[in-house]
Length: 373
Image (cartoon, rainbow, N blue to C red; front, side, top):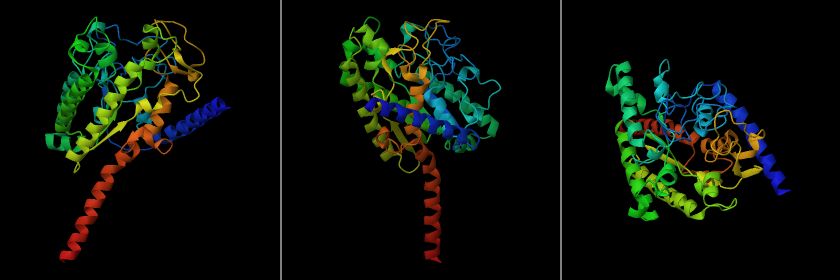
């Protein structure tokens, strides 16, 4: 009975989300632009022409996406694709590798499969675009936007109104620390030291982003990658999660939350940072299959995936299905159903925050003017 209740809850959420997304698409976007930095959980095509094995621009990837395979590492939309729709954008944010003919004033997606916070992360797979390189690409776009506005100052004023979504860090563990045959980090750092080193490097990149005009940040915590089919299979756990790796994700998330508090205190006058507690959604929530992939064993070209994709948590051995992405995108955008999923507020309230701040300032100034008169 409990399982049936969870399944009905999932179906209700999907129904509500579909209606909410339809309303968003036909409205006006709640922010003028969205910039995305991250890894394969957000990549929409930046790896397609890189010399890397981390690619997904072939079927069955994209089997449920409107235009087919694009370089997204799932069967349909990513979590940020869905959030983009919930924010009211009429089109998905284009990848940096293919902004030709796109309106960069709406935003750019810099995410790259295999990428990490550290530059060397994922290099055993071939080329990827690390967080630092994604930031360099953003500088290129900022320069182009300044040219369009005819003034760096006008460009900055515009960029301060945008939303900045950062979802990165899992590969620094799965494709670095827990791969000692390729990387020395596990011999240099304890897990706690490594998490702190990652947070410190992430904070430097976020500060650099701030210098380029970012003011509203969405920072995704790490999912419990110890529960991915890839990790469970490599450890021979017979479907049980690898707790050492989950503990690493939770420690990183704890430090990320502290960083959010630190930055919100430091930049309280004009900036806001929030974090999404992805690991809080570790249970399957009524999904029938949570320990195996819909498209297993590498998800090679033209492989036949499962038919009941909406009942699977994982699309391939690492990445979630569109159904799971949808379940996570909903409370990230509006946490009324699950307040613990975000901190200290959800995306919907984050994008409303600046408007309220300006209104409070205006009202305060008006009141002060009345007193002096």
